[in-house]
Image (cartoon, rainbow, N blue to C red; front, side):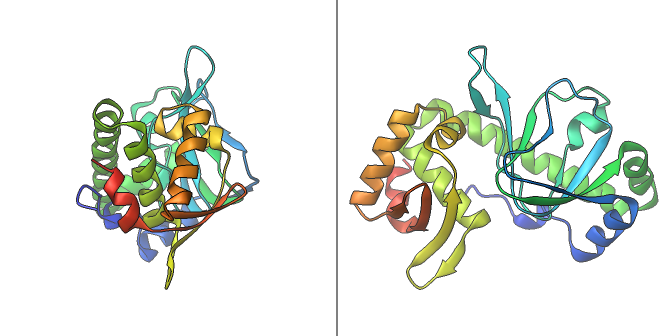
Amino acid sequence: MSDSISRSNLVLNDMEKMIVRKAGTTVHYPRKHTVFAVGDISDRVYLIESGWVNIYRLSAEGRKVAVGSIRNPGELMGLSETILGINRTCFACTIGNVSMVMMSKKKFEELMEQHSFLSIKVAKLLGARMREAEAINYELVCRQAPGRLALMLMRMGEQMGKQTNNGTSLNLNITHEEIANMVGTSRQTVTSLLNTFKQEKSIIYEGRAIRVIYPDKLAKWVV
């Protein structure tokens, strides 16, 4: 996709991961576990080893609103608030089982001082996420719900899917309500759109799991 951000700006390489692992502690969380919540003290940084994490806020009505892209394996998480020294302003919740390395703020700052290349990587990552946030704001204002949903599925295919001879396999076992929160629309609208995508064979949808997506077919909705 033309507006996608290079994965090299978002994920750590093997050497960088090794440095973080030595400075932190590995933890494991089950599906739908809240890693941190609004108001928590920002005294830790996380490296996701496996699994995915959703970042969101709550509206005045209590509805979950996605405020960033899903965090993927190899990415650092919880950076900006820890660097700024302010309490958490978002929730971080696991989508499935997740393993990550947890590192204290003190250790994180020591690594940044000791390894300038890590500082540069963190700066690139934060810059990339700022661009993602700008893109999300643009999409909410300028794209209709079908385009936002199609684009989200295409991005998830890039991030979480596996390429096959029949398209991109995306074992996405999340509810329609969760998808609606990610694209800023209602559950009913998501259900209707997914049925439309299925009828036109842009996706193969089984129960809650989207098994295969066809980005070329979905792309026509992104206008």
